[in-house]
Amino acid sequence: MTPQVEGRPLKLTLPSAGHLAGHPVSTLADLAYAPHTTRVLSTAQTAHGNPSILAPQRRPSAGRPVTAAAPPPAAVRLSGRQWARFLCRLLRGTDCLLVTISVLAGFLIHAEGGQPFAGAVADLNGAAIGAVLGGLWIAALGIYRTRDPKILGVGTSEYKRVAAASSAVFGLLAVGLVVFRVQPASAFYLVSLPLGLILLPGSRWIARRWYNARQAQGQYLVRAIVIGQAEDVRYVLKRIAKKSGAVYDILGVALPGGRRGASLDVDGRRVPVLSSTDDVVRTVGLCGAEAVIVAGPVPGGNQYIRELGWGLEEHKAELVLASSLTNVAGPRIHWRPVEGLPLMHVDVPRYSGAKHAFKRLMDIMVAAAALVLLSPLLIVLAVIVKLDSPGPVLFRQERAGKAGQHFRMVKFRSMVTDAEAALAGLGAQNDGAGVLFKMRNDPRVTRCGRWMRRYSLDELPQFWNVLSGEMSLVGPRPPLQREVSGYERHTHRRLLIKPGITGLWQINGRSDLPWDEAVRLDLYYVENWSIMGDVIIMWRTFRAMCVPAGAY
Image (tube, rainbow, N blue to C red; front, side, top):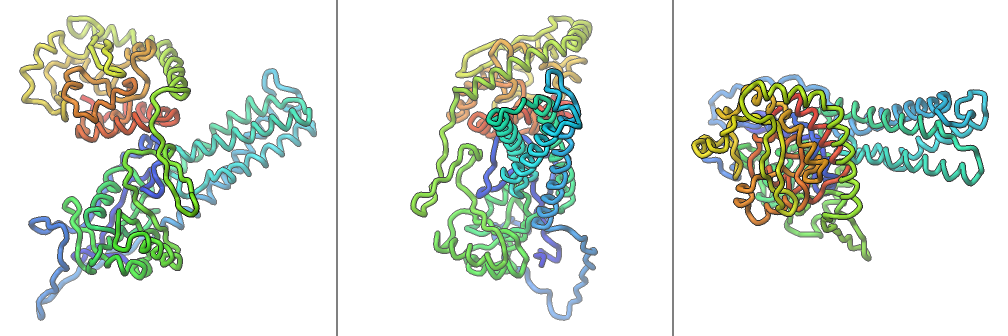
């Protein structure tokens, strides 16, 4: 049953990565990986005055003919449950195939320094080890729940579980080889493991792209009803529609004392009220909803939620509780039951330690490799800058780094030499947000500077700042000192870690982002960053450079 608003069906199609509260975003990379496909909440236009809750529409006067347009033929679309079952079966088959290919490659290909039996077809020991390895690998992918519908197409949890399962299997194999004094099967480690860690995540990535393409067409959506107080419901609907989250087809809302036929205004969109909160279970059965999202406190409190969960069992619908925690990623959240009382622990962010040391090691390795590999391009760009306009090739500017310490950030000069002096006369033409100054058609930018800035080529020398320890590969945007002086109190938390060449701000719109959204992304990164999240951000930065947005 599809709700109608002024004779038109309501459809709220949402972004495709991460989960709403109840299935919180598992890592920072969940946000980093979210696709940028724009989805639109299509409803009837809001009535004049944009009331928050609109009364039911009046019936047409008697005797007045009403012409209703014939509805378009309904397309056959899989529900959220159906696509999950289909995708799980698909991935189970591809996992078995790719594990078999990886193990056979390690068995047949003789790796340098490997034992001969790992590359000899006739050797029974190698065949036995390969068979055991393949069986354990396939079993581990199931035990680690790498095909859990809650993580399919969602952030990096899927990839992390595949890597964890693979590492555990090969670690167990190493122990077994030592215990039973079997000759080391080097080829399995040098060939099978790397190949599997490429093929398995690669197949998941292809499946995810296919899944996201179907989502853009309005398929594979979980039909859901949001219940709670009007303001809480409105907030949840805004966050789901605006940011990456579980893909829901919002059928409507249920409010305390709500009347069927009324509407709830959400940013100028009219979302139908399907029932009161007391009649949710029956409404779920009528609408065929697959999930009920509880947005904040509801009348009846915990007793109501418990009984709601019982009532949803007969319809096999999920109960999702919206958390009041914001900007907290999954790894920082832990559940600990104490005598039937589930307690949620939220870890305090750490700004030093082994994880940060590993981040620094990755910065050094990648920055050094980038400077060597990109040296021909850097030389060509330097020549172009020198010939394009008079002035130095490199531009050095003082920026605020970790803990507010000043450093000189280096980049290719993309503006005229007196750009800083001309800034005062351009203040009225600022297109930037908050304390940032940006102009879409800045007259100070040179000819080569325009295309260099568009593709972020002017920032390549910042790898030197990374190598010297002043910046990181991924982090908050490095601010000017005048920007820092205009920060609000909480915004200074951006300075708790090193600024980065790239970050969430760059892959989510750059200069087109509203200031408060840019700050929120930076603060989210500061408190929830992860190594896997950094890898995903760097990958998406490469894609953003090829198809730039908000770069000027």
